[in-house]
Length: 369
Image 1: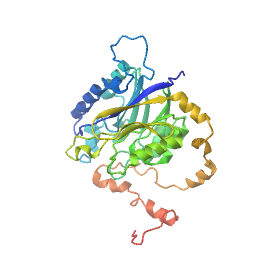
Image 2: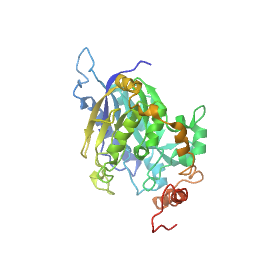
Image 3: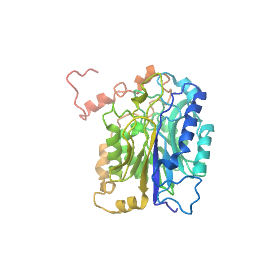
Image 4: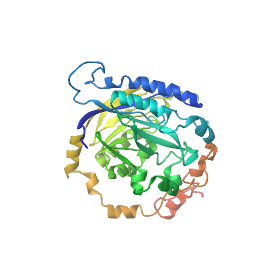
């Protein structure tokens, strides 16, 4: 496959309206399409779509990424049934079809994240990242692996692990099934979503499957989480020698939260962990960065500080030998209301206690079971 060695990636910082009824998705979808119509102007070398020139910019816009929940916002006021019947979508479906038309028109790879209902689990929702190629086809899907246990009622593949592997894992390894990577002319594209990025292992998982550009969208709260979004993006990029494209919500229009609770700071990070593009403020916007694929591959061929090539996997297998968070916790029944969300709490599941028993954690003086 011939690759495009130099192109521009764009992270869109979006301000969605929170959706409670299906027809409200149209508000966010229409705004996303308006933004896409101007995305070619997000970089200094942009040329107007109608301009008659006999050349392309040296780094044409080829990858555009929206943040987590850009079509639906985020609510803790709707139970699972409302999410399934009114908020979640099918992918592909009417919404992604409209986005696909823009991807085709602009000749770009378009990335987004939406709450999805899967045919095999019609009474659950999954948080799905998807990539649309310039032909309009969806070529990549990933389901968020570690939902924030106190804020999300989405099902993780790990919550129904045995079934998930049976449905999606035929002819593939577990790692390939759970952390897929798609080969494209823009390099090997992989993704993790928001809370996944607080686990270094998940950056490593997609990189071990060959990822060169890792897209890590979020609805993170940079002011609340004390810079976690930045330093996990930078650490993930450096540890895997990968580009990280990280669009975050710039705000949210909702009766449940202040508008700038999701306060932006979208960024693009290079394979040396350096921020090459950033929106260090809330609000709607776009940030671009140049992806130099051949440079990345040359960097990975150099053994100096080549961290992925220095892994002592024999020891690491022992580090991860004992299970921590149990699989298949929602095999029989999904969490249906936010009042039940305690059921996935690690203390409720006895995980914290087991870490004390193993000597991994030392209990505080006031510890009570």
